Amino acid sequence: MLTDNLEKVLENEPKFRRKQAMQAVFLDLAKNWEENSTLPKDLREKLNQECSLEIAGEVESSKGGDSQKALVRISSSEAVEAVLLRHSDGRNTVCVSSQVGCPMGCVFCASGKIKNKRNLTSGEIVAQVLFFERRIRESENGKVTNVVYMGIGEPFLNYGNVMLAARLINNKDGLNIGARHISISTCGIIPEIEKFALEPEQFNLAVSLHAPNQEIRESLMPIAKKYPLEDLILATRKYAQKTSRQVMFEYVLIDGVNDTQECAEELSRLMKHHLFVLNLIRYNSTGSFRPSPLEKIKKFREILEKNGVRVTQRHSFGGGISGACGQLAGEKGRA
Ligand code: SF4
Image (tube, rainbow, N blue to C red):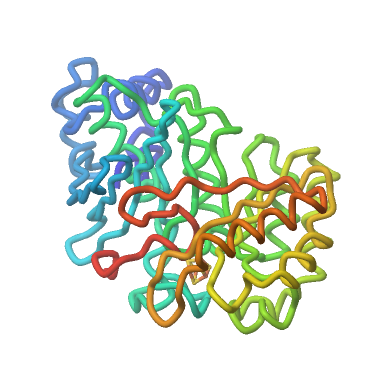
């Protein structure tokens, strides 16, 4: 799909063809290589066969119009979910999936229940961003400004393709979105966090935490058995120290599970680092769990702030789309 076979198709072509091809995909937003008149006809035909620019998808808008969920088709039998979040300050964030289904099995998450599991190619990841880039350009001459890997899948299980796609999104010949506007989220795969700390780009790291202690984390997220909470916090501290970059911890508040005052006190102790930021998200019900009541969230936040934790609270988008790992897959996302 898209750029996946581009290098192979262009391997015997002069170097400037690559720039022309990238321009057709990312700047001109061509939907068919025939739209490009600078490339020779036989090359356009080959590109249409090997690097199709067709991106089909169905869109569902939230009531307030501040979010759009798309089911982007990646093959005749598979589709993945991507979401556009429209912020009041003009930012347009696209939340992408990195896998078809997710094997991590977090108990509160709909994505873990999707059966058909495989890694997405870099082209399939980029296609989700381009899908919205085309729509925004056509309707209002706007642009995608931010990309977050918080859709379906664990990005660090697909490390190579995720990084390749992030670089295409960041590249000045690609979508030219600044590295600091691209965030990659993990449920806590420590070796990849260590690897990510060595990458030269300034991409952001987000960690899906969702629990203040090992016991609760293990009951919600099976990955905690392999990579215990204590080790995860240590790894993110080392990451912050090495990169001097902030780490965003995502915390979905589930009624009666991880939202008590004791949880807030415990969490405050974990978050004691000047580069740690905690993002509180009201749970978007996907089954047996309920979202925390607003009063409880308010109290939870007050305790954290009293203890000096930097807290943000994500705006809840119209359709109940919170844009957090495990919060996006609806019925339609089940490929
Ligand atoms: S919460 Fe994230 S890591 Fe866990 S199963 Fe869902 S998509 Fe995978």
